[in-house]
Image (tube, rainbow, N blue to C red; front, side, top):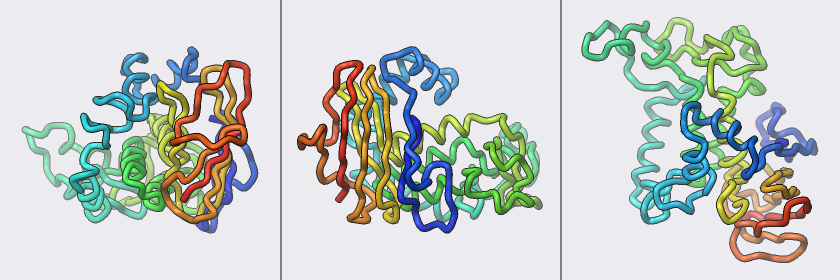
Length: 290
């Protein structure tokens, strides 16, 4: 997606994703060959068709898109289990540099566990901050409508927000790293294995489809932002099935989630799934949150 321009959240710093008035454009097309590359980056080894079924449908499949279960709702959202799980993540696993894989760290090698216990405490799989699965936490928070928390998790590993701790991070300030040393490590906050990670791909998936909320589905683009309440507006240009959608999202209501009104070329539509436009056309979309 040629990324979005927006009224940036009041974080005191700019970012590549929240710069004021810098429109960005999506080069992905859900029905073109680039989509295969797009989903392959996110899933690494999964089949492209399975990616379309599970991730591109935005919940239209009973067993797929966006973590939805047989009842059409995201798993655990109605029972409170999802919220409880994420509270545990925040209370037990979150740190100022990102979410660790587990706690406590193993302090000695255990034959029945193997590799995970072979690393020093706080490194790699042994209670380290594995960067490529931090976006999964952000996605999950967005599913629950927690825009502030989803963005908080995102920015902890985002290079644009951690340049001022480069002396701690110690890898290139413009690229994601595989891992960051966890709180059990003597070098807490130090990153390792830059470039060797799927974090950038997963972060794009998180930012584009969960935080900004532009989700490809079988029936059309679904617009369902989950953003920090301080983000007043943003725009996205998204190419989808040969048409170009110019989407403006207004959050004057200062909410984290919820779509009040959607207009397509000046006409209000029911719901928040945009009607499919003919290939070669351009569509003006306005979304009011509330």
